[in-house]
Every structure is written in structure tokens, then in C-alpha cells.
Length: 201
Image (cartoon, rainbow, N blue to C red):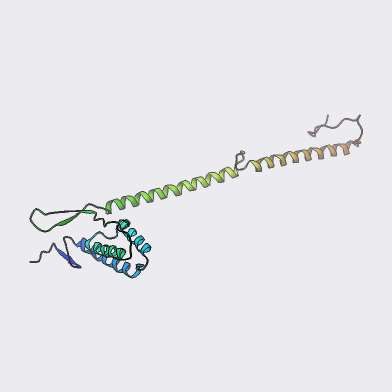
């Protein structure tokens, strides 16, 4: 008897079409890893095995069988048993009340959490970009501002001294002009020096 709610793939019977698709994807991953595994280097192979477990690539029996093969190869390469991590199943196995074989109930629901996480990452990224723009704008304003601050104090002080020097040069020029007009001898002490503001007495 063939039940339409049962799906078969790679020698396993699955209860949902999504599980079959996941098993097919894991089979493709298995083929990829089989061609690229460093089979003669125990350390590298153990690192690949650990990374596969950490990233939870295999969650169906198809992937688990590949992980079992990897464990056997690691043992054959001389890796100590305590260094080989057990395969996490990420699910519970229970007996159905109608007497059928065991079914796997997944406890992991990733789609909703991933979408929520992506939204938070985008929001965080946008906030960081805005804050960076504000910081850059603050530096530009501080550098170009007329008030002395820690960023532009040297420039402002140099400008102030330059203004004083220009003012003194202008006053000296005015004094020399007045002296020339009055035919005043610069060495004479008895003569009165004209006002530096350029006003006549």
C-alpha cells in the first residue's frame, strides 16, 4: 500500500516533502565533501568534521550516515575517541499512537528566527551608517568652525597672531606716513608722536 503522505529518498521514508528536499540537499553536500576531504590528514579532517557539526549542515538520516562514515575514517586515521564529537540529532523520536514506526519531530524552527535576525542586522547596519555620517559631520564642523577647539586650536591661534601682526604693521605704516607728513625726525625726543589711530590732535 502506498500512502501519498510518505516520500522515499536514498533508502529512507520521509513524512514530508520538505524533508525529502532537505535530504537531497544534504546528499549534494555529501558529494561535495567527499571530493574535497583531506583523507590523509587526521587533523584537517577532524577540523572539517567539527565545522560541519557546528554549522548544522546535516539534519536528516542521509547526512547522519555521512557523518558516521567520517567518524569511522577519523578512527582509522588514529584520532582518539574523545576528540570525535557525537552527532547531534536536534530532534526527538517518539512512538506514534496509531502504532506506526517512529517519527522525527523537529524542534528547530529557523525560518522565522532567521527573518527576524536579518531585519535586526539591517536595522543595526543602518543605524551604524547614520552614526558614522554624524561623526564625520561633527569633525567637519569642528575643523571649519571659528571657535577654538582641540581640533583647530593651532590654526585659530596662528590666525589670531597673524591678525595682530597685520594690525601692528598697519599702525607702523600709519605712523611712518604721519612722520613723513610732519617731517618729524624719528630720533628726536621732544617732538610728539602722532596718535596711532590716525586721528589728528
